Length: 351
Ligand SMILES: C[S@@+](CC[C@H](N)C(=O)[O-])C[C@H]1O[C@@H](n2cnc3c(N)ncnc32)[C@H](O)[C@@H]1O
Image 1 (cartoon, rainbow, N blue to C red):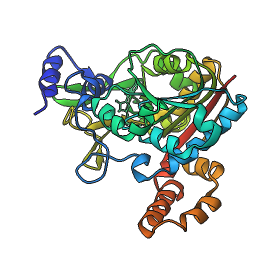
Image 2: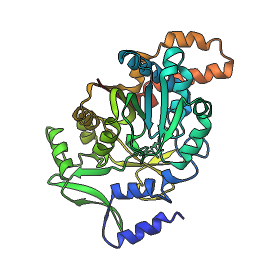
Image 3: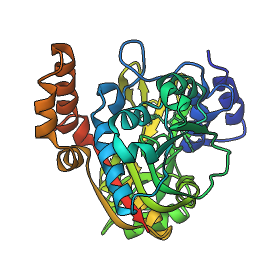
């Protein structure tokens, strides 16, 4: 059994542990955390979950067009740095780099930022040709980021940040905690979270609730500060603050492609994740001086920005298995009730 369970049991002798602390321990304990293991969780058979990158290159190809448009809007700078925090295996960076050509390809430098050792190892392989030609490089999460012009983009970064579920019980706020008897909702002062929730509802009903990610402002500030001019783009799942409150957001556990609410079980051996509050993410970016904020469903973003008719015609020339896999990739990201309808894309602009 993962030693995190012993660490958690000993922590429980001191009192209830808020769910966000359990999530932080499970994902980021320096030795035993789920995202500090040598083996990555991503993929199909034998893995815990897949992301849009496992489905094919369509997300990266569309993103490459958005980045190129940003490069044009910035006046074609000689160097366009694209920083990807939470970059995992580097597959999104690889797909973007593979999709760029011409003068933009010469300007583009991709920067992978993710201290997850499994991610780093897989990214070294995926990005090898681009590392060799210095079109890609790594930075550690502790490295301070030099100012740059270009973009910050991420896929499923913000849903992996420790987050605390809160619930309105009709009279007061309660937070989800772990006790020796199991998970419970206990009354607590929500502080800044309470003020945020109050401004995003026109009346709380019992069982309304949401997620509060304490680390979000710090991370947004850290990522936004070095971007002197350019695009901030986040792909993730979540909702507006108002919809999350009405829905009552919880933590989810992903294991072997199953999903449930047992966030306190299999610590270090299962993914824990929470909906992203897109209203808060946008508000924080506005506070950092970004404008042009917009967010849409991923499926709509793809259909708006990808020249699907032209790409569809080009795929006809591909061998049958490749053509089928491109088509499946497209359907997964654009059909209702598939991945593209569960994810959102937020864009913000500075400069
Ligand atoms: C859900 S995975 C997504 C990986 C990849 N983007 C993908 O789509 O396959 C989240 C990743 O974010 C990383 N992460 C979490 N907090 C981070 C931070 N502050 N800076 C950089 N990476 C972070 C984790 O190590 C993990 O690899």
